[in-house]
Length: 115
Image (tube, rainbow, N blue to C red; front, side, top):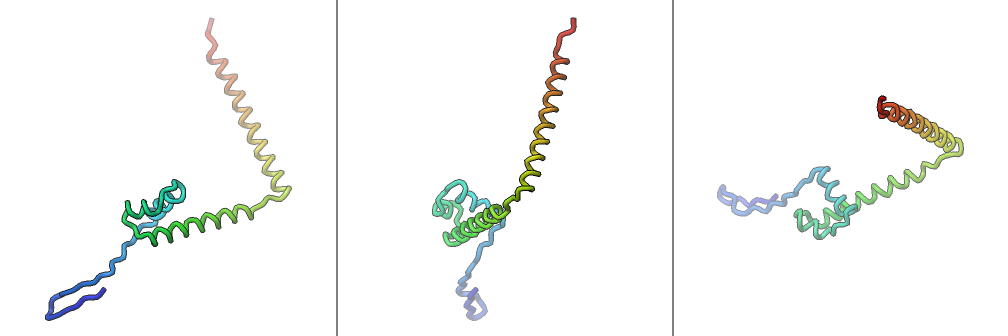
């Protein structure tokens, strides 16, 4: 900030005011650009954000996405891990099927009309 002080009064003030934005706001704005496909220039004009700032936010967001995607790709399963996961899913499916069959029988019993 530059202030020219002549005779005890502020004559000229040149302030470089820097806006700060919350993390939630940054994430919201970058998701509207990246995921919803809005143009950066339109978002900048609508929300009064400098273009360079938004460009940097979007670039950081995309880099984080790429990094997370690479980490997920690096987590390949071995044959034993895959077999274990498959068996867990199969057991879970059988349990759900059994519960569903019990509920169907109960529904049939309770919906029968009494004679």
